[in-house]
Length: 202
Image (cartoon, one colour):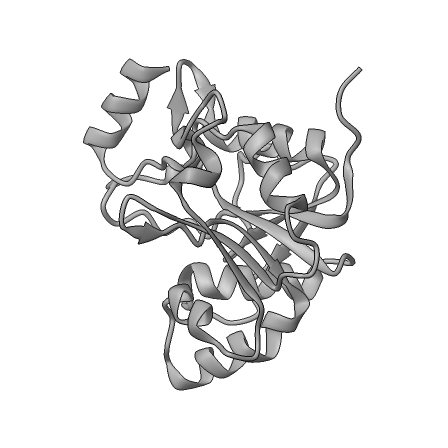
């Protein structure tokens, strides 16, 4: 019998579609013959009762049947706009946000991050010298702060982590290395070389 779903968190797949470094639409990438988008959405469904896909605009060919799809409330605001949209649309107090280009998501890591500190407004990994904002937990208390960032044209989600109004829980390698997948869950595909590397590691 599998683990019960986490009821107070919504799984949010942010799939806006801008893929400048890849040179093609990352939403249709396949690793080991399987769509990364489809695999990610299916995984979220095994963890969370509610799941959302955030898009910039409608697109044909994505397998989103049986899933709520919402569209960016702010145009051209990148991942930050997608996160803001997911938080507004969620019926839960918190969301777990991921990007659509992460082929090695680990259910155990996601469950751990979603439940390790229910009082935190942000649970984010700081690994190998950088934050991973697209594999993190956010509460609805982030919404007005994200809206203010959009108004200022400050579109780096990392700026949110310095906000003194929020309780931010930062996880390090030491918190995550006991998982069998270690840090693979945070790995994403930005370039054709990343895709080749992911294929060889799958």
